[in-house]
Each structure stands twice: as structure tokens, then as C-alpha cells.
Length: 591
Ligand SMILES: [Ca+2]
Ligand SMILES: [Ca+2]
Image (cartoon, rainbow, N blue to C red; front, side):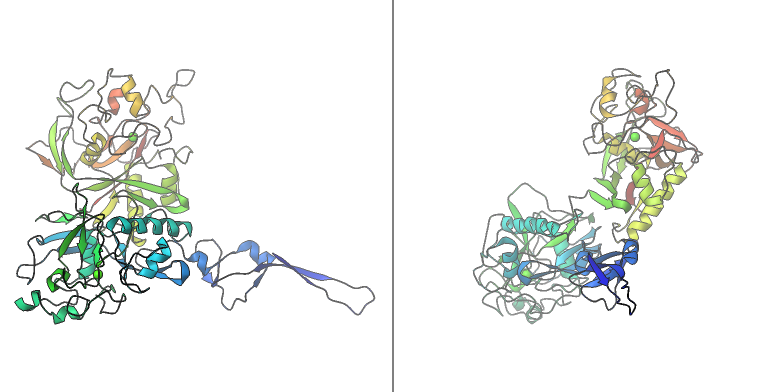
């Protein structure tokens, strides 16, 4: 802050003084201003330092371009500046579907490349180049490579070294304020690697060409020469980015150095899969792309579909890696809503379970509305870790119909309100480029709700316990807020007029990490309620498509223990709203 004093000396005997207060801004990069702290515009022709009249300074926010360089935006390529003037270029890869493996008749193909359809539901970034020695040294402070050169790919790095690099890079970028908690650097999965390598091609090489003759499989291959360093055009590694890039701007996916992948080289399925990760228990990880090496690598090993494997501690002068930037944490996702509020979504694998209650379940309706039957859910989906809170509801819709408390579940929402929330959230997330392809926010079906609630259990409660009493019991107290622990009764023995729901996430979660599936607020489901389940063999992806009431699940803070069981079903007209009713959002395959 600078105080600029301007003395104006008059001709008169008495001197006068005129002054103005100004804010002095000394900055690096480019100066931006904003009226709301969200939308920024460049201050054209700003001097440095820049003086702002104090009245303007009260109304405006200022920042420099450096500060605007916030966490990466899905859809945009970016360069992140490492130390010592070294950049790391990352290319955005759109989510999509491709054929992984080699088509029939591809010359040089191996038996472990069974062609199958893969869908990657989330976009990610992939390094434009193999990690160079300059980049590796900027992050790790050392360079283990055999062939030395700042722009050469780093080699002699094990899978463990590559993972340590990713971990340290993530920590450094977070410390620099360039990476939000929602993303992390890691290695690409084999599927992410091959999808990006192919960039839409279905041929052996990503320039749209193949190995053309039998001789080329183990000999000179002119088509490969255009895009990669391999045994017949090199004796050692070459600086990153000298050969032709693929259609998505990625270099050296073929040859130069082999690239470590995150996952194991497990057998491919024949059916279509979503977001596959090679599984197993061994200490080996997949290697992709082939290398310059004369003794270990032929043209066939540099194909888009070619697969190798190496132990996690193995090093060699032709093994390097390329980094990926992906969403944090397996498949569970953290959605940043407005105003610093996040939404936690838990991935639920597809599977089969027994829906309903056994006939002898205490407090159950196994003879009628809860008849036990097998249900198969063919597709995975995400479900909210918690009931939607008032803070979340307000961040998305701008309103809060409940009695106040940011971390309390939203209540007094009709089925229509809950669906409107889902639709709006879908639009916001799609615009932000964060919506997994083929998925949208919606309410869970009754089957999706009960499957997720049970998390593998077959008991009345998702803790693996049955009720010792229909009305009041310690088993219910462990997992949820219900009539006998919520503070339902006031001192006069009447129920509380403003409700006694509790902040979400205080009781014990189920095995899949979901909270408050029992009690607190009852949760709207997508389905129309039908008194009896449709029972003709195994039900596949069931949903109630006609009726006059919508399903409510899980019971509430005003319910008796039996009304909070996993199998318990309730219903109301869709316009019904009350202080015991809320919802939990699903991110499910579009119908
Ligand atoms: Ca390579
Ligand atoms: Ca609940």
C-alpha cells in the first residue's frame, strides 16, 4: 500500500494541500481484475507497479496471471513449470470408447492382445513426452540414466522409482498451488496408455500404418521409422519429441524407451469393459511401446497393442515412463460444487444380491412387500457417500428449504425437488467437463439403493447384525439416527417441531463406506412404488415404472428400528415433503 501525496502550492499566502489515497500493486506476470473474485479480466495497459484509486480498490479484486494458473481445467492441455526452468507438458485426453488389442490378421501380433471394447469414463492428461532426464532431476534431484542428456528420456528407473516420481510431483504441485486435491499424478493404466497411443487409429502404429511384410516383423520397418526410435534406426535413446507425434500430439509412444504402466498385465476379457485395471497379486507391471534396444526389441514390440511386463524393481537402460494426471483415489470421486462445498461419490461395482428380507427377519415383511428375490445389477454406478446436505443443496440450487445447518441433510424436498437437483447437477458437471461419459446424476433405483445399503450383508442392518428388538435396540443405535437416539422426544414428551436429524456421517458406515443408509432422513428413490416386486426368475436392473407413489428408503430419525432396516420400503406421492424426507444422489448409466 502506497500513500501518494500531491502537494499543490497555491499563489496565495496560505498553502493548501490536496491528496489522494491509492493502492500500489507490484506484481509478476499479467494483472487481472474482477468484481466478484470469480470472473477475471485482464487490466489492459497496466503499468507495474499499478496504482488503483482507493475507492476502486474497495470494489475490485486483483491478481496476477501466476495466481490464476490454478489447478488444470479438464479439456485443456497445459504446461506445468518444474524447478530450473523445466516444463512438463500434459495433453488432455477425452473420455471415450475404443477397441483395445490387435485386430485379426495384424502382422506381428501376440496371443495376449485379444481384441475387446474398452470404455474410459473419465478424461485424463498424459505426458506429451516420455519423462526426460531434466524433468526427473527437477523433481527427484538425481539422474540414474545410462545415456546422459537433459532432453533424453530418463531410463534405468524401476516401476517403484516411477511411482515415487509421481508421488513427489503431486506433492510439489499441490504445494505450489497448481494442483487441487481432486487430481494426482500417477502412471497410466494399460488401457489409458493404449487409448492415448492409438488416438483413434486401429492399426499397428499410430500413424495409421501396419507392419506390411513378414520380413518387417523382425526387420526394418519403414512405417515405424516415421514415428519411433527402434533397433533399426538407433543404438541408444534420442531426445524426446523428434519423431512424428500422433493425432493427439503425443510423441514417442512407439519406441525410444519402454514405458511403465500403473497396472498388471492381466489377461484380456472378450466382452466389453469399463475403466479396466489389470489385476493380480504378483510384483510385475505392464510395459508398453517398445524401445530402441537392439537385443530386446523388434518392430512388432513397438506396436500400439504390444504388451510386456517387468518386475517392479527391475531397471534397464531402455525402461522409462510417461506420467498421467487423473482423478484422485480409485474410482471414488470428489465433485467440487460452488462455495468450497464438495460432493463425495462412492463407486459401486455391478453385482448380484438378494433383495428383500428372509421370512424370519424380526420386523420384516418377507411374506409380502419384502419378498426375497435375486437381483442383478449389470452396470456399476456411483452413490453419494452421505445424504445430500443442506450446504450441497444450496450450492447447486441456490436455495435451502430446510431448518438450518450446513452439514444436516436437506429435508422438506419433494421427489420433484430431488430430481431437479440431479438434473441441474448434471448440467453443471457436463459444462465443467467432469461428467463421466454415459453417466448422469439421478436418484438411485430401489434396487441400487438396497444393493449399496447391504454392501454384501444379508442381515436386517448393514453392520451384519439383526435387530434384537423391533422398536428400540442397540444394533440400530450403532448405524443410524432413529426414534430412540435422535432426540425425537422433547422434555414434554412431544416430538421436536423443527426435526431432529443429525449432521451426516456421524454413525458407523457400511462396508462400502456409505453413511446413514439407516435412519436420519428417509431417501427418495427413482422408482414408482409397487407393493409386490416383479418376481419372474432373476430380476435384472429392475425399476418401478408405473404407480402413484415414489419409493422412500432407509427410515428416518422419527422411525422405529424395524422401519430403518435395509429391506424396509416406504412410499409417498412425489409432491410430498416433510422434515423426515431427504435424498442421496446417484451417478448412474443413462437410460
Ligand atoms: Ca516410448
Ligand atoms: Ca438415511
